[in-house]
Image (tube, rainbow, N blue to C red; front, side):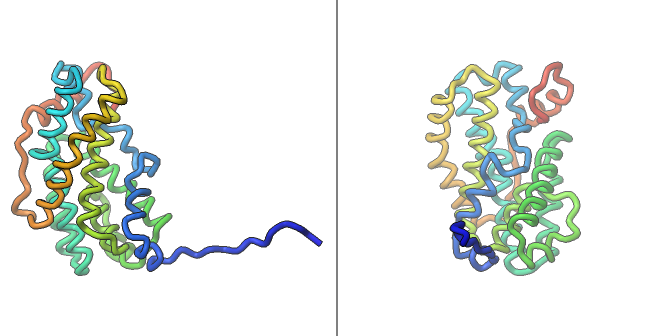
Length: 241
């Protein structure tokens, strides 16, 4: 008689995943999730080249500005709009959020950054975390911005909107800190100190964006935007943006 233990197949249903609360976010926003986030620095590579990022203090100042006055705040607003549209089954609302998200990418590299990651995100979620409503709403989306993709997936899986917005902003900050560590004379401990100081303000920013709509989207990070244009022709590059 075989002594090998019997095995059984476990089926993970959408309901079970929703009951897991925010746990899918830990997977979706992990560095191991196959969206290629490691390949983008959102202009940090040019900022290091230009001498704007030199140390822990300058990194914190730069990140705080682009997250609160630039794409971080915008992405959170767009994520919330996409979430609400998906939750109500409004494809028109989802399209409006996505079109604005893509239009707000101020350079070719910024558009590639959000659209490539958004497409990869939806493909990975659809393959590993399928949901009937997600498939119906995202079925014919071609170019899709990352925050819109996350808002759509979270709404379909019943994940709390506030938790999604907060997790997304922290994940953005984590990716940028990781890029800075690879680019600048900033050690891992310094990077974590910066991240720890940013997190409370990012949580408050996420709460603020829950009450905002598409008319509130806007940014004022001109040096970062211009730096993205210059990065396109930068002589040596590790990152795609």
